[in-house]
Length: 515
Image 1 (cartoon, rainbow, N blue to C red):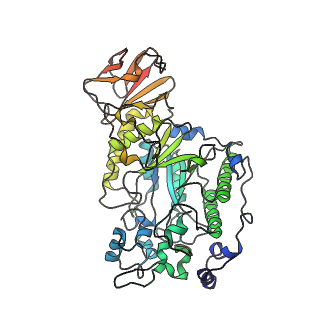
Image 2: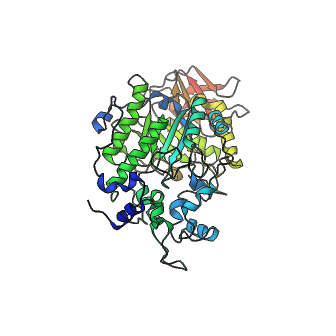
Image 3: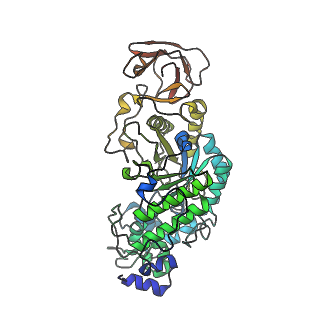
């Protein structure tokens, strides 16, 4: 085992044991113990996992992508980009606080005070808006834990708000009957935060090391031997000690809070370590639920999800068809971490995405980024209010539904199969010419993504053999109490529109007899 100069400095500086013992703990087995149960930490064993019904039924969740990077309110990846000379966040930081060699990320953490954080009130708002699960940030790439961490002194109980953020969220979410999730983004931190070990190349502070080079702060900035300015999102170059440390940190998170959903930002990391963590997560749940794992683990790599190991998560995107297994989109109404004066997604965009995703057998988890104070801003509250109004009328076509034979029709049905991740910005706006379908309890729901002029024509609901559409018995418009004038012929289902809209966005026809 080679000990680098920086590692030697680390030993002399007396770093925390989980990190500083890396040179003498290279193997997986010592201390890597998982809960006994039906799963072992192998792909073969985990292929027997089945996604629980609660996740299939939930369809909509809300996420608080919130932490010390929210303190500056200048958007996502602040902890990295403030060390990237010439980047907008670097320029802002230097102008506002001074160079990162003098005022580093560690010095911004006290500004995250969460002085207006009322998790019970927020969860009540999210539940009213139709969320069936809530997800807290656990740890982002900035290496700062939002719980009472056993392996990281840089955590929210010790500094910043000095509160167990994960624990507070969990308590109120479960009290309101929501499932509780937590996200971890830690595995790539070894590379992501390595830029804190650099220095300016130009200007008055050229050659002056950033504060991440100080061994006193290696437990925050990570004792990385290289600097990845061009970040490659893979495991190459990440040493064994960090993989082990990742395992111990996230296992502690799972042990303390036993989340219903554990989200990893990327693929299932570090093979044996990652598989052991997932098996531990599933076994804890199985032992509480008569041998059946009632929890979810997400991965963004198909290889981890096609054979039952994990649940597919598609960041800021939508898959191209009805997916054979339930899956999830994670996206945000704005930037991931709070950014002042940003333009948010409109309520229509959010509702159209929700309908589109659910029609393809998916769930939408939507991030409302909290500012440093912990209170939603007025524009976020407006978006949330509009979602709430729409759900009050139309949630019947969302919660507990299953896909139909096709997910929809119209010009917005095209999606590239090769670019599901991050494809939301490339998708066409949905209009009254677009329809999405869901089913539940013998009824078919046709979600029309706008208000048709005079008449709605839903072509796939023509009485036909290709989709085996039967003779329609009744058509109702959710939120409208009157009787509709409709007909079914060879060109489709035709509905004369009433005078008043029951919803400002997508409308829903409940169709009886077509299945």
